[in-house]
Image 1: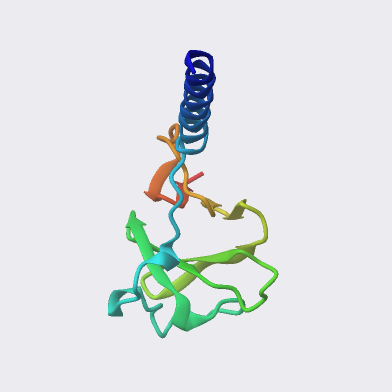
Image 2 (image 1 turned 135 degrees about the vertical axis):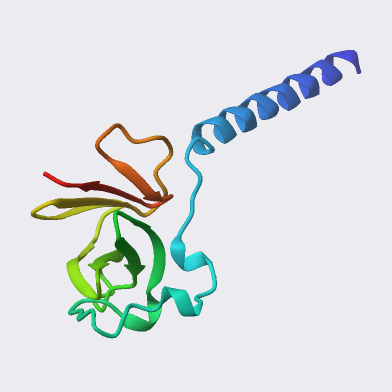
Amino acid sequence: MATLLRGTQRIVLISVVFGALTALLTGCVSSYSPFDVERSEKDALPESVQTDSVLRDSSRLVGSHDNISFYAAKPLDHKLVACVVASKDGERLLEGCGSGATFGLSVPGLLVRYYAESYGGSPERPWVKISPNLLARIGS
């Protein structure tokens, strides 16, 4: 009986260690999607912002910086993961979608990186964390 108990204890210990390692390795980056929260009035893209590739009624305002509003939206093309729209003063500055877990978009003076599974850290300058899923680099 004592030998069986030791074997059981080993199995329990191995299970606990394996569970802790799994939690440690997978828990470093939390998973968050802007589409997990209910859409509100503030999430609507301004009517003046023209878009080509997004489902307008899926947009979520994810943050703003330097008077630029950043939105995440679901793509018209279901093969893509998400889209990002940036606007300032009612004008579209940037719009694009990506198919990977991470994708980047740029126009002169603005770069963005979208992370489908959240960005798990603090970005290095000159990058700014707009939301758990979006980093931006504004300026030259």
